[in-house]
Image (cartoon, rainbow, N blue to C red; front, side, top):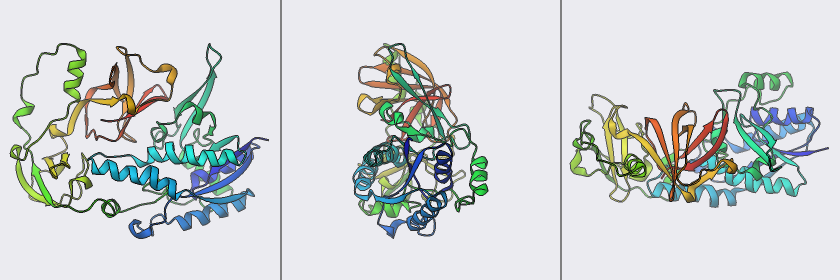
Length: 396
């Protein structure tokens, strides 16, 4: 009998995951990951880990499977929290959920599961995995979108490797969310009607400024509003010597100076803000709401523009360095000078967009057919062919 360790989070998705695997004849073990101790920044009634842990235990008892809690808070702090602080300090916008999957669930947690003699790790992600053997006799694993378009979570797994996918099961990937809740209700699982948790992976909902202020101290600076028709947007395009020069031009973000606009307010730290952000600016009196179009953490200035159509929010092309480039399907990795038409997204739940990948010596350009709003450095871009996610990278 194959043994599977399920990451029981205390939510309905992982509960039904454990139930389905047991029904399919696997030997199932439930493990709850405790990744956080500091409750001072957690909005306690939103996602208390203790309640989640208790719910996971009750589900395990109901299903008659062994259950234990593993404390991964040291690894979580080193690999996720410290990384987040470092990224925000540089003026970048990290995605802790993608990192949590790569570094914690499918690395640290997976190693613990294998030490317990597991053949697989299973999670309640809405995605699917299929496998085939190629002409060289090598087994290739494919990461596919979940059947539920509203819940597809393949983006959060965009950094997984073939080795990790080989040992992973996604039992609810072929189900819609209402079907998952129905299965939970029919089997009297306590989590059947439990709301989905919102917030950082396994921490819960946090006050991000409070969270960041643990390490990044407040530092007063100015908010500058950049006018819509700034001259730099109207300049004639240069003549490009080759395609790479053109891609480099479109991937280069504008550089602003305070003289480019007018000071309209103050803030407590540019590193607390991200591109595309509207809330938290506390500036009134504008015809349309202000959006952050750029942050300068060196000079501690936030540049904003009126309205979601402000040209400062948009860019057509992004760049991923070789160090930050990841192919889920290594067999499809592009060689220098080659291109590939794909569908891509720069954030979770964004509708897939037409784009072309261009491989160059230093990395990979992702050139979108249409300009994209709020490309935030530090976030992940993923690229897809059909239902399959084939690669990803960190936006430079």
